[in-house]
Image (cartoon, rainbow, N blue to C red; front, side):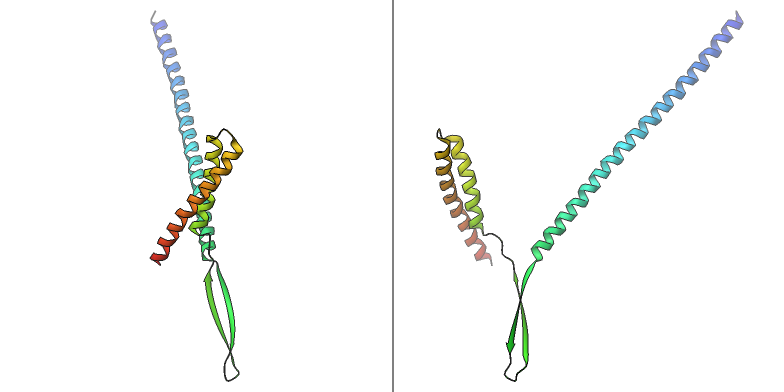
Amino acid sequence: MKGLYILFAVILITSCQNQSKEDLNKAKQASIDSMKVEINKQRVIDSMKTEMAKIKEEQRVESQKEKVVVVHQQAANGNTATTTTTTKKKGWSATAKGAVIGAGVGAATGAIVSKKKGEGAIIGGLAGAALGTGTGAVIDSKNKKKE
C-alpha cells in the first residue's frame, strides 16, 4: 500500500511539473506575442510621424516659394546695376474660396431639398455662391485691415 501511495505521489509531482512547464511556455509565448503587437503599433506610429513630417516639410517649402524678379537698370555712368525683388506667390482670396465652397454646398443642399433635382441644384448653387462671395469679401476686408 505504501508503494501505491509513493507511486501516486510521484505521478502527481511529475504531472504538476509538466503542467507548470507548459503554463510557463504559454506565458512566455503570450508575453512575446504582446511585445510583437506593441512593436508593430510603435512602427505604425513612427511611420505616421515620418509621413506627417514630410507633409509639413512640403507645406513649408510650398509656402516659401517666391517669385524672384531681376531688373537691370542702367546707371548714368554706363554701369549696369541689378536689383532683385522678391514677391510671395499669392493663393486664392477668401472671396474666391467662399464662392466655390458656397456654390458646392448650395448645389448639394438644393438637390437634396428640391423635388426637381437639377433645378434645385442650380438655384442652390447660385444662392450659395452669392452668399459665399459675400462672406469671403467680408473676411478679405478684415484681413486687409490687419495688414
